[in-house]
Image (cartoon, rainbow, N blue to C red):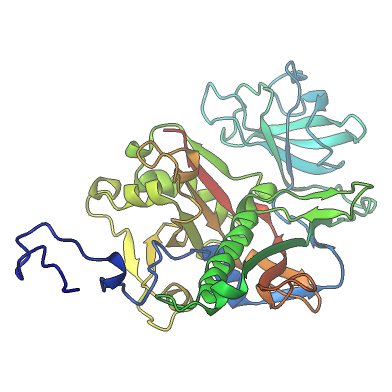
Length: 426
């Protein structure tokens, strides 16, 4: 039977062609919308991990900053007068910071004729159980020969500025500093991927299906560990019906002191505000360089010309092309110059971003963290590790292929006062 011609050779008719005969183009690659960014984990692994023989690990810390406390009384004890030798009895404080013969100062007060302090006094008696102290007035720290008003107010900060002993005095009581123990757990992370026998043998565009699923699952796995390193909580679940589950605390679990909530809107935040916000993290060791992990909204704001004050030299490029961070992220890392130290800014678009409502981003996009990376370390279980691949873990007798990736990871986060979080509500 001859073939019926239903259209002209030039396609002006209404003829059709079988879809199976049509050769179409497919790029021999599967394009990923974005790479999985695991900025903190990448830095920690490059620095080096430490293995431990137990599901729990810890570290010891102590603070050698100035001895201080604060008045803890809505109606604190008053001074008997404003003359040298005046007394103040049973002044209640937050904790027992001072001993007899200590010289202390109220640093909350202001100088001048109408000052509320800042008085200087010696401790004549201490009652740690209360805690409270009895004081004898020495003078006004800024008043020269005169002593102005020496009012006491709740939450006034008191610091020790020395000791003073009389001639032929007896030795003081010995002091003993006990370091504080901080604990965390090793968390067990797992992800798997699988393909059937038919699927595994298919010729496909891009990498084979098993490799494609492996790449996707491993990326998600690293992102799981990364997000846990920021937002994880220190917890052990000891359900009697199953084996215990351990959760590793992240940055937010241990960062409790330098939590800055910017009073204004992010659009008004400027370089000078960052100088104030970051000041506390440099008070223990000025001149250091710390890392600043910033989300999309914060990065956008810092890239706005109005963020940088006129004439200020805010950004500088790190000149060393072989710099560790530049190698990790494959780009030059910007550095912000501050009066007390520098911040190296790492965009973290994978964790600190709101994918659900990008036009009206939530809190997670409007925050940044300043970390002293020297105080952080990735911990793992002995003879295990992070990103460990296991192959052919399908059930016995199952036709197909299942592989997996697992990690045993915990975060060591020392000296939380060396770090900070800055958040914006709007």
